[in-house]
Image (cartoon, rainbow, N blue to C red; front, top):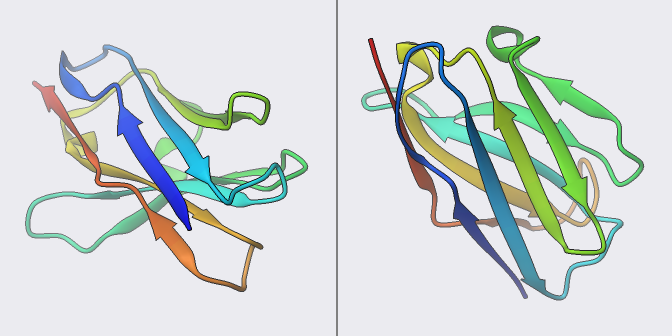
Length: 118
């Protein structure tokens, strides 16, 4: 079992920054594939950013150049640095972890709310 706990969400004005953290515990190691999803009210859940065990990053087009995903394997923590935030970034952000990029069970955190005011 893997447990994921997100933190760092909040209310910020447009143009501001937030850093989300996801603390992992349980049967997880540095080989896990990890990422962030988000879900805005009335919309489908969207994959925002991912990072492989060897540090390869990928982003949805709408956040490229503004968001940075990173991981600290020693601390078993995943981060999402969000800069130049826009009102359309408002959503609940979820951390995920999976044994490999394409296979295995996906573990989810409980989510953290990010609200960007205009």
